[in-house]
Image (cartoon, rainbow, N blue to C red; front, side):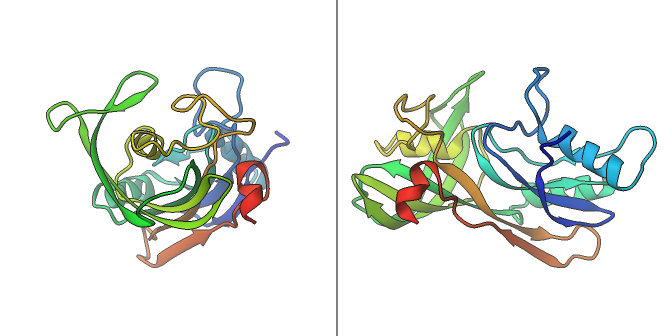
Amino acid sequence: MSNIPKVLYEDNHLIVAVKKPGVLSQSDGSNNEDMLTLLKSYIKDKYNKPGNVYLGLVHRLDKEVSGVMVFARTSKAASRLSEQIRTLKFDKRYYAVCKGTFESKSGEMIDYIKRNEFKSDISNEKDGKLSKLTYCVLKEKDDSSLVDIHLETGRHHQIRVQFSSRNHPLLGDKRYYKEGKYGLALMAYSLSFYHPINKELLEFKIPIPGDGYFKSFI
């Protein structure tokens, strides 16, 4: 496959790579490219591995979202990384461009989110799952804001749902805003976690993209 993702780090236990917008995290049965298949092909070719290549998916990014992802190369690594996600030791940060300017330039959003098949909505404690994030507005321009987001929980479409519910939808979000000339203005720019074997703290960051809605903030 020609569209091999950019690899930021790899060893015998894990591989960290950058997902481009429009690429799935894992196959959905369509002909669209997905990170698992692309990286399995990369590993198979680079190391001349016969047979099937093991690669564990421990977290996801929406198809429209770009950013840093980690994959496990052993089942032990997959289990330990998944445990870090459950115990909130897995740190994810995002950049987003939102509609409008914020009255509070930093703060916390706490909601209960209920997932439907293709969409999620703000719900209540009984029906939804606790969803938390903190944010900080970095820049404002032309009735839009560049926001740095620290995601504390990882619910389906969480960032998109929480910001749209407060009248600050993400630009380019065709599901929760339905306006825009570019793709979804959301990227996972930072990922940190403890190495599943040697326990070393690993942190990976990528720069803000210079296209789409991010371009005016460069």
